[in-house]
Amino acid sequence: MGIHISKHFRIPSCCKNSHFQCFGKKEYITEKSLHAVREIIVALRSNVQIISHGWMFRAGAALNQTAVQELNAALEKGDVAKVRSMLESGWRLEASQALYTYLTRMEEPLIPLSIQSLVLGDENENVDVEIIVADVLGLMKEELPANQLLLAAMLFELLDAVIKSSPADELRGNTLPISLLPLFFTVQTQHINEWRRIVTVFVEMIRQAPVQLQANAEPADDDVRLMIEAPSLNALDAAPVLEERELLQNVVVRRYLEPVGHRGDCSNLEVIERRSGNGAE
Image (cartoon, rainbow, N blue to C red; front, side, top):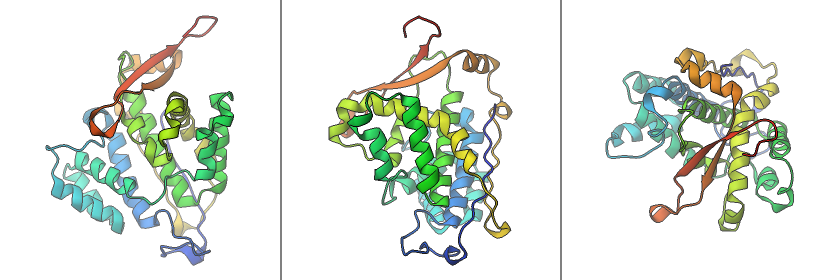
């Protein structure tokens, strides 16, 4: 089944055309910038197999840094026309890097610390991953402002599309989901011992979010309606064999800690097939 977002959020009239919410707290992202971000996410999803997961959100000498800067400025201003024009001109890789830069400059992670504690805290280490994810996504729907929730939903769906379009028979998965983990969670040194569990929860969030966050749609005024209608995975010419395996397997992405370069980042991912019945993993 393809991914489809159709969300109508009601935004209080006192907050329209303002960088601040009604109670004096600065908006996480303005509606204009959200529309601009949407343009890039839809373009990336529509070209995910062409661009390849290995190139998304990766800085490199091949990128036109002037274009990256122009796109980043357009995101900050919420200049949808500029973003759309540059995407139509073929600056997709530059757009992905600009989006990543824009998101990393956010003052806070997408998920509030109070909700993050369900994942990062050790009190839930023996709780089933599916239960933790259901609680986290449920709290996000209840507590996040409309624009912030929709931004999270769009990013989750992009990650879901990337994972599903990756070759199913590769032992190494892609690192994109893990590279975006800091946008959602404040992972610190004390969490290293729980790294595998945190990553497993995050990947399950990516799997469930397209359905769970979609359920939060509600009627909205016509002038504040934001709709996203990206092509389904079937429309992206996904290989039939991949579609078959998606029905037969429960794919788990795990990452093993391995310092790479000065960032202490990790590069190794494995796609592990969970076998039904009494067989072990």
